[in-house]
Every structure is written in structure tokens, then in C-alpha cells.
Image 1 (cartoon, helix red, strand yellow):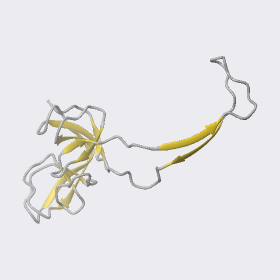
Image 2 (cartoon, helix red, strand yellow):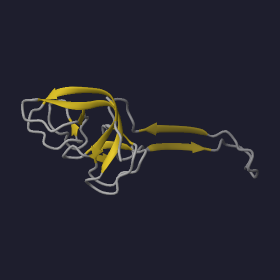
Image 3 (cartoon, rainbow, N blue to C red):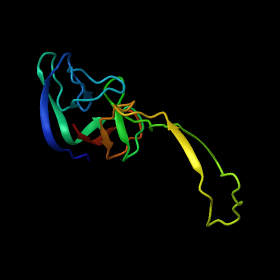
Length: 152
């Protein structure tokens, strides 16, 4: 049995009928699209134009869109369900050389200083895939209900 621990619930005007609770809702009052940042998780089905209750901070139940490992960050799929976020990849390239005239190292406990010049393809700002919380329980398949820690 999943037990929610909600810290903050708010409301948002439903832009369309939101018939399925436990899905991520965006700031426009619709279910989140793929990789969209959520305003919260729908707490109750809501008619178009009505105020929809959403869980904003806390441990809440979310419908999974596929298999999810507990402890992993979750994002939204195209219908507002939780999916495991993809790992952020980084490319670091570097060049270096042993200084000229250095003595070859034959010990595992000593090495000459090596100058390394590295470049990175990462930059600041929003991550490439916004995430909406951390899975506290695992999902075996789409449709499973899991606990997700959301923090606004």
C-alpha cells in the first residue's frame, strides 16, 4: 500500500478535462508533455475550467509510464506519467604529454606532472531534460503507481 505524505497542495485552473489523477500537470493546466516541467501532480479528476487540486511538495502517488528504478529521478512522458530520466551525458576532451626529458615511471606510486588541457561541452542553465522528482518506489511497467518525492 502506498501512503502519501503531502506537504503542500495548491490548485491550478484546468485548461482541459483532467480525468486521470496521479499524473503530472503543467503550468498551463494540462497534463505535462514529454520532458515538461510539472507544476504538480493531479490529486483529483477535474472538469475543464474548474480549479484542479495538485500536490506540489511532498511524497505523492504518480502513475508510471514504464519501468522505473527506486531512487532515480523521474521526468514526464507525453501523457503526464512518470518515466525514468535519462542520465546526463558529458563529453570531455583533453590532450597532455609527459614533459620532455622526464624519466619514465616504473613505480605505481609515482608519476611525473602532466599538463592537461580539457574542454567541456556542458554549460549552465536548465538541464536538457527537466525532472519532476525522485522515485521512492519502483515500477515494473507502465500503469504501475509509485511514490515520487516532488519538491516544487
